[in-house]
Amino acid sequence: MNRIYNFSAGPSMLPLEVLEQCAAEMTNYNGSGMSVMEMSHRSPVYDAIIKETEADFRKLMNIPDNYKVLFLQGGASTQFAAIPLNLMKSGKADYVVSGQFSGKAFKEAKKYGDAKCIATSEDKTFSYIPEITPDMVREDADYVHVCYNNTIFGTKYPEVPNVGDKVLVADMSSCITSEPVDVTKFGVIYAGAQKNMAPAGLTVVIIREDLMGNAREDIPTMLDYKTMADNDSMYNTPPCYAIYVAGLVYKWALKNGGLEAMKERNEKKAALLYDFLDNSKLFKPTAEKKYRSMMNVCFVTGDADLDKKFCKEASAAGFENLKGHRSVGGMRASIYNAMPAEGVEALVEFMKKFEAENL
Ligand SMILES: *Cc1c(COP(=O)(O)O)cnc(C)c1O
Image (cartoon, rainbow, N blue to C red; front, top):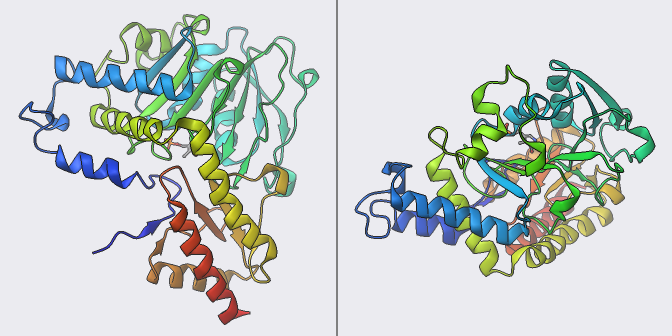
């Protein structure tokens, strides 16, 4: 059977080359006589894998030496609690609520201290990013939390928000490694890896060193960044295989020109789809133009039954997982790094045909 075009928001497509390498190495990794799945995380062969993965990730994202990279478990959702538990020194933090995940992060932070929502785009069903200025941030807030790309609503920050000298914390689960980012503008960047980097099970945290060591005393050991950093992400068993695959994906991205090249490819793919949507008489994009995501393209026909028909016929034609998030309906095409341009081109052709038949 041929592979389909998979537009899933996550877990999502991985580069075919990476999957083929995984398959080839599945039973015997590099002459070790075993699969990476079967290895002790304390073995020299695995130690080389995790070190190389980190080195490649640092190179890909241009991460400065004063930032730690942590390979954790629990998904981005666990970070919703880990962030306030580690960073709330004064007990205050400010949140921008620009979608469902940032709403969840805000709700979780309220359990641990005085979290305040300083801006939201809920008034227009999260179809835009609420802009913030430094004067909106409370003087004694320990950090400002944003979600950089809103996976469910298909919006993204057009530029790094200005929070003055405050620590900026960003959930980049659905856009990490899609384009270059200036890591030095952030105190913490975190991401569930299952959207753009690896299979599910791995969460990556990039944290400026001076922000560690301030955790609450009653923090669960597993959530304490300092513990994890002091133990090189090996306080307990890390998600070994997912880390290994992430490493292959980083090598694939580096080989294909790094994040500048990823950005160029992603911009082209997104433009193809948005241009079609902007000119379509049947389909309508839902995000405001200025804030459109390059990764998650959301659209509707305006008729729920027709949306359903579209998803059904798309699926039969080999375009899978185009249904929008269960909370918003409509359609969403997630076109992460691993989605080839041909996949988007083929989707647009299919949509043109569907439009001609259903207008
Ligand atoms: C998917 C996603 C999450 C949740 O990730 P889990 O790893 O499932 O906990 C959080 N934030 C964003 C932006 C996401 O896209």
